[in-house]
Length: 99
Image 1 (cartoon, rainbow, N blue to C red):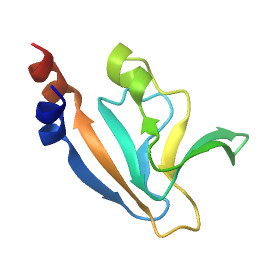
Image 2 (tube, helix red, strand yellow; image 1 turned 90 degrees about the vertical axis):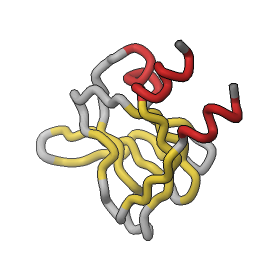
Image 3 (cartoon, rainbow, N blue to C red; image 1 turned 45 degrees about the horizontal axis):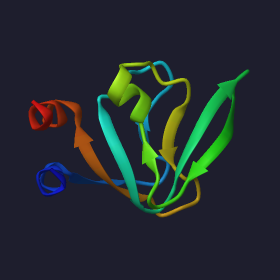
Image 4 (cartoon, helix red, strand yellow; image 1 turned 135 degrees about the horizontal axis):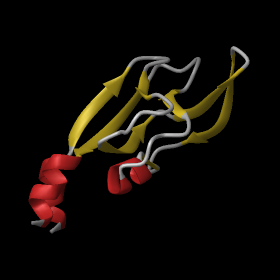
């Protein structure tokens, strides 16, 4: 299973301040941070606030991926960083694998 899963993973490179997804979206991808960092941010009264930062090895988007839930926060590459690299598993590829 793990060998088949690893073949499905694609690499995604994000530029500085690039967004993976925004609040209220359903994300159909599962991400694993490989290099760099991902910040979760919320917007209140026109200001952006970082609620948490995920480092390499962290998984992003799992609730939306498995349960089709809307994201409550936006996720972006960390500000003032060169960007981030992630491994991406598309939901449709995962469904094919577990059929």
